[in-house]
Image 1 (cartoon, rainbow, N blue to C red):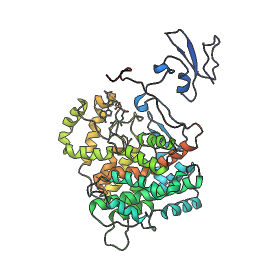
Image 2 (image 1 turned 90 degrees about the vertical axis):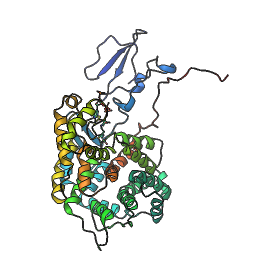
Image 3 (image 1 turned 30 degrees about the vertical axis):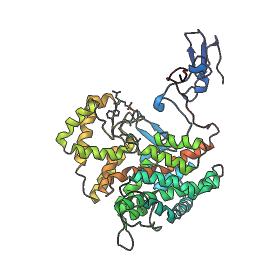
Image 4 (image 1 turned 45 degrees about the vertical axis):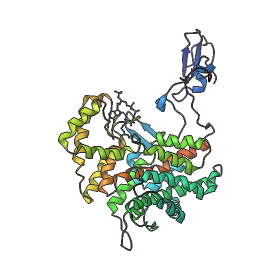
Length: 436
Ligand code: CMC
């Protein structure tokens, strides 16, 4: 549909929703079709009078109210705290599925049948090794390099090992890189940790599950075969499932933006890891732990809350752009915590977290701002109890998010509407001037 100008006298049909805009400077009215609850910015741009002789633009820093894509992967209702992958409620998936089943679901749209799952697991398991040169590459990082820096650079470097990754129009080549990325991400993350700890790298054990093998690569020492604790193995699996996709969040949008220029998936995912690293996104899980340690004891919580309310600090692990109620992932994570603490020791920081949550949920500032615990609030406590150093937390998020990034990257590439991402700007600089 195109814009009708000026507005017709007849009333719009009840089936087609339209929006009528009147430009007070010209007296013209414009009727814009509303589809799927959105108007097209390109329709708006047909209305003259924007800056630089262009049509009208929308100004939307942080894309608060801009849908940049149509997607069939993940559904979120932020007011009701609903999260679904391909239509399935996250609660059911977390209870009944494995992480690789979820990866299959996100990428292909369906949960795998038994045989399909066996093939998919086999494929992933046989790509967990990394080229020996990558080990040398990781060796080159300083001993105190942050694991996210290592992960991001190493994933980017993978594109040089698999030049066919550039063939993004070739379905088989795409599939190979998807499998490699999901398979190798835990290996690289574990190697980054072992490098920082000064420990020898542990090669993947293909007899173990995806998460069991990851624990093996992290913790194996002198034993002949690593035997993961089944409770911790399953807890990590559920944590990965809960992080697997979250529609158009900052890192996923980054992956899509980079993918829109037809880059290879390693470059796109490396950029996504960079976005995830930030403390307002995936880096928040690390910051929550640091915050709880800083608070130190329950009696110091009120003082901390006051500083947050004065705007001096943010309460890390609280708030979300989309959820204006309790993040359903945080609810599930809270339940896993009990299972994990039954095996490990209870985190001394848990009492501070629980009390902080209680006070925040009753406090007028948090209530009126609709700030609830998000996925990062409790996950760090579990990771810490499992023995992961704080610097590793965001890498764990990255491993979980990899299938989501790839599903969204591929969906973007196959979308006939996809164009290279190139937002507009409102120029606020100097008018034309000349060098004296
Ligand atoms: N603590 C205190 N005040 C907050 C917080 C917070 N965590 N989050 C938002 N606010 C306030 C903010 O000060 C603002 O107040 P006012 O309107 O009075 O100026 C209002 O709430 C809206 O904040 P915003 O920054 O405009 O909201 P946003 O949608 O742009 O930001 C967010 C969302 C997640 C970046 C933000 O809530 C935040 O910084 N949270 C802490 C970091 C965090 O936990 N991030 C993890 C997010 S979930 C997992 C993930 O995506 O990785």
